[in-house]
Length: 227
Image (cartoon, rainbow, N blue to C red; front, side, top):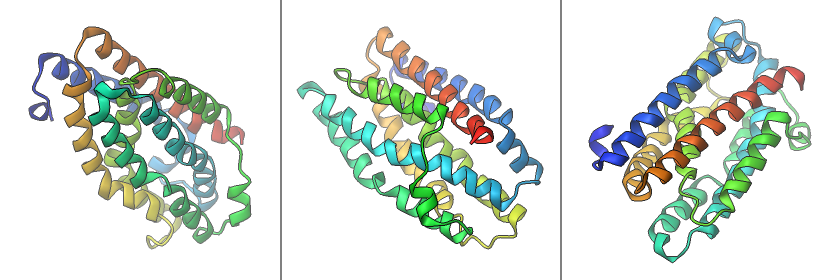
């Protein structure tokens, strides 16, 4: 990975992001619903609850990404173009998630009527605030966490879900899709690190946003128990 980032500041930023990721993995390991998944006592009801709560983050993700694109000024036109392409690829992902929920025995009207939990509310508010700032290069930190989940965990989670619920892959399409496609998204992210991490201040902003998003994403999953 470091070979894809060439500047000293960029490599330091990448190393910091990797440390944030390892801490995020430890946070996820303490989340009850993820513990049940890893221990193999995960139910189809657990899975529907997971999808119900994830949908809120997924459907709002396209909003903060497009808000961020509108906040990049002329000097960052190349970054804006890259982020616009990403938003176009993912802005309807929630439809795949809804289809999985129905295939797993849920009702479409139930998931569409779902509301953001406390963690989702905090994550959405923070992301919309950051995306509204001029030239929000720190969103790279947020994308590192969210795209990293798809690249590093989605396929494994899909496999574990199918094993625990006697599934055949029919209702884990959303996770399998991201497990297969987020490698390419992360490659684009690596290419952007050198571009947007040009000063120590930008580096710290990127790492801070990654840490905040990691904590709020874990909180979102913790709050499933109170849903």
